[in-house]
Amino acid sequence: MKGIFSVLVENKDGVLSQISGLFARRGFNIDSLAVGETERHDISSMTIVSTGDQRTVDQIEKHLNKKLDVIKVRRLEETRSVLHELMLIKVSYSATNRSSLIELCSVMGAKIVHVSPKSMVIEFHAAPDVITDFIELVRSFGILELQRTGTICMSKD
Image 1 (cartoon, rainbow, N blue to C red):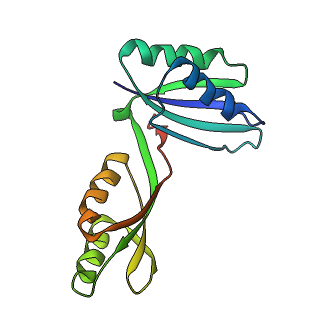
Image 2 (cartoon, rainbow, N blue to C red):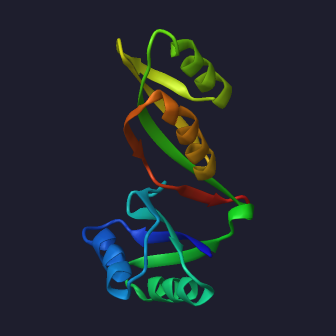
């Protein structure tokens, strides 16, 4: 089971460490973690994605709510939320497959942000499963480097 948590926290030193420490101490896995300031400078938003059985996901929510610097914890449903991730991927190419890579980027909505004689850096933002599919599609070209931001999520309601 996937647990997606939107956590509003006080934007101050040590909060990220406290939250990640909670996961480490309890043996909970963090599949994805993204943190950023909200519209208010003194509040940050964390999107934490974790997997486990129902009891584990419930325990994560319970422990997050106990933290002093946590303002609000919301558990989001994947089907009722917008999930996005940003990826930069450096892919090698040759003269024979260059146009295929460019066409794939065009079809998928990916943006080529840098071109060198033997590789391209591609920017792509989409739902995490779409990003994973894109990675598989470009794997045959040769992935040289890959960076993903982690999932950010917002309820549709």
